[in-house]
Image 1 (tube, one colour):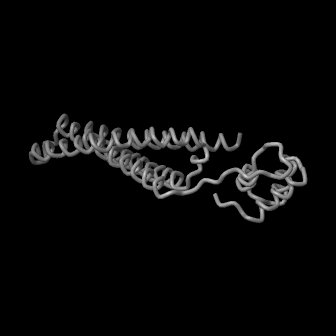
Image 2: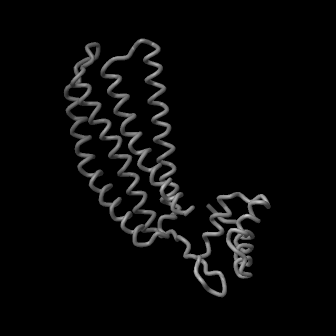
Image 3: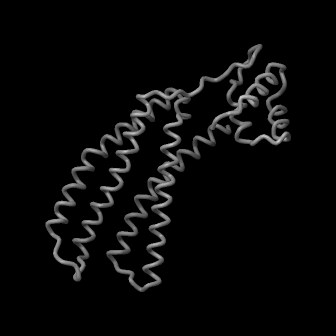
Length: 214
């Protein structure tokens, strides 16, 4: 979140005059400033004893960081899609559609492609996740990376859309009396994968927000 320059200057001047943080925050809230912006402005200055307010280091965006996060989330999408595709093929083989023509060769090729993609993409995702998590632990400022936040919220948006669509399809087919085992298992697969991704990144963002408030 971009912090208003006027707000930052006010907080800096108030802290320089020795006013308590609680009093500054209360005055800004009474003046109509958004609570999230007030929190961000207050946390922009470190709570350490010094004659003048000491600014905290601001997160910066490097090309390397952007590249790593883009690869991380791309491999996440590839892994999630191909895991779903692989499970779909197993469901197709376990519950074949008698009305459809034989697609054994297509199923075999689809399984090979899904497995190949997972073998490449998923280890890269795990490696980058561990690497970037370690970097954040060593330097908590990196947690505020704009690329990380944007890609995380885009992922939450996509997975929320998938879950909504998945549940809509489930209700639609249930009301139409077309609920079959193969359809239900496919819905469960999509909902399970999307729900796991959504839950993981939502918990991560909530933990970050709780850390900022504390």
